[in-house]
Image (cartoon, rainbow, N blue to C red; front, side, top):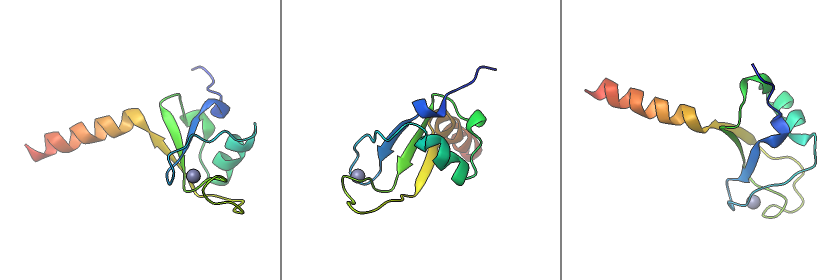
Length: 84
Ligand SMILES: [Zn+2]
């Protein structure tokens, strides 16, 4: 199992849709605060932030959520199968 660097995760603001570039180390820190194990993440995961310094000036902390792109797809097909 290869090590995935959580710092490489794509971070996007869910409010204004802008990609967020934050300082190195912050992603790992946020994951730790959210209780997310970085070793369970891979390059299919993106982080959505509810707000960013651009659209919420003055805010210093934002609610973040990890979205796994591949998993959403398999969940959708599971629902489809259940409906049959
Ligand atoms: Zn924003």
